[in-house]
Image (tube, rainbow over all chains, first blue to last red; front, side):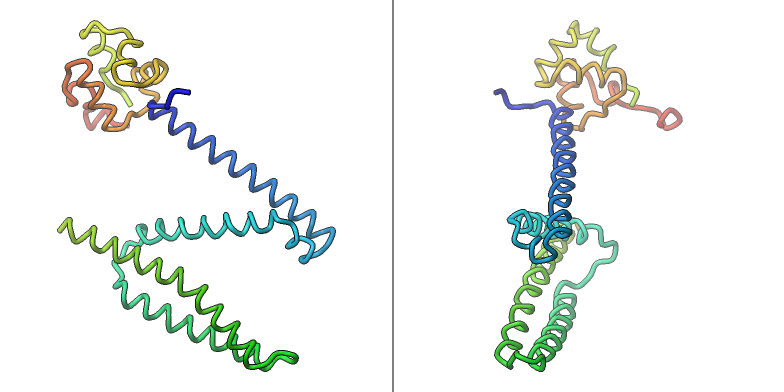
Amino acid sequence: MKKISDERLVLRNLQNIKITYIVQTIGILGILGYELAQGGVEGMRQNPLWLVFMLTSVVYAYMTMSVSVEHETKMKDPKKSLMISVVVLILIALVVAYLTSITPNFGYGDGGLIGAIIFICGYIPCHYVYRLRQKQQEDLEDDE
Amino acid sequence: MKNNVKVARIKADLTQQQLADEVGITRQTVSLIEKGKYNPSLKLCLQICYAVHGKLDDLFWVEKEEFE
């Protein structure tokens, strides 16, 4: 097959992919909704489609971050924003770790583990946004 | 958007298909551009200008009053 060089058709192809993605997502949500009604949350999670849905959601969320950073009208200091995010994240992780550790059948070890997981999972997007803001700042500095 | 691609193409003695082949697009796209139903990218505008030996200003310039 010949590679499409017509920009109008390339754009239409992208729009087709967008529509396909919407239809696919509706299908996945329909199946997961049915599983939820049949076997509850656990039943839904056992379906591999749940993993596919979560993975695409995470990928989409990361892609949206770059759009959000470019959409910011006020320039934010990347380091300051990262610091604020990390402090808030540490507080949330500590509160969750404490609450987990005082829950019956759970110990300090479990609390520490949950806190560490929350911190790591939260730190990755914070750092990603920091890198995006830094890159944006560099690009804008080139322009001045 | 309104443009003068059709006039420039006829002046250059090219058919829609010839222009399309030279620029690497489909004939339908040339037709839609001439009718003003598809806005080409700046890159494509320049390629069309090179193909019909025209200037961007002559082919695609629209006066502010006519700008929709």
